[in-house]
Length: 329
Image 1 (tube, helix red, strand yellow):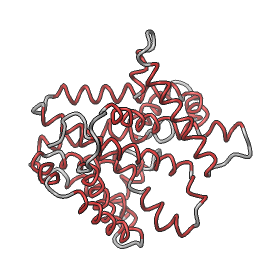
Image 2 (tube, helix red, strand yellow):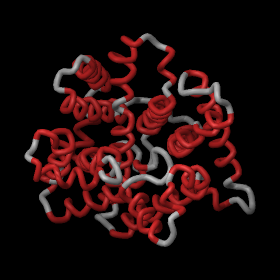
Image 3 (cartoon, helix red, strand yellow):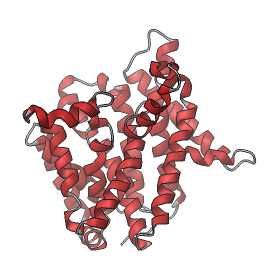
């Protein structure tokens, strides 16, 4: 099993996925021909958010297993994530106030905002954080009441339900429609539950050791075959699960230089900072300059701002009086 605290391949992969997530929202890919977008870029970018979930879940549940399921580990994870989410909710509050008119409606808006915080989103793209905050304790709870090999079943059924709810009788669509009345459940904890469960299963030491025993190249080849099939629409809903899992395995077994481990810690920080900064920031130049729209120019601008902001936050965190920046990532 690799280092308990640092797995370079996962840190690098999460950083790459952060670039893809920025591109999903800013659409830098519009510079490429439509056929390239359809069959190469969009299928690959479709792996990005699920991979973020799986890596985050894997790292958390690996730590839980090493601590013999100490509840304090779960509390620390949950507390840390809530503080990070609150930090960026405050940072982006001017944009949130413009986007959520109900916040101007008085005391009743507080409950609505709390529901958004945990079961929807506050700032753009923050649903990932809320989904982890709610979804990780659910999967952990399932692991306490079910046999380990059964934990994936309920999250998988939720995944199937989200994709096939329109084909079910009207009565079966009520839960989806209820949730969808304030937030698309695909962009909330129900949409992240399966990926969190996969991360849980992958954290099993026997599975991890088996993955580590297989040559890295096999995973990349299998992933390429899976992506080709996925991109042409062969069982896309199920192949997405296969591809995201193979991508994790390829990243986990990726042999990278270990002389300077600090660079991987830096990339890990960049990943979360790019995520929480990009989608809200992009609205600022679009608001200030009417000729700036989603596309390659805004993508480059957003990446530069994300990098500069991340560097500033990471460096200033160690400056006296700025230790509170530790809550930013």
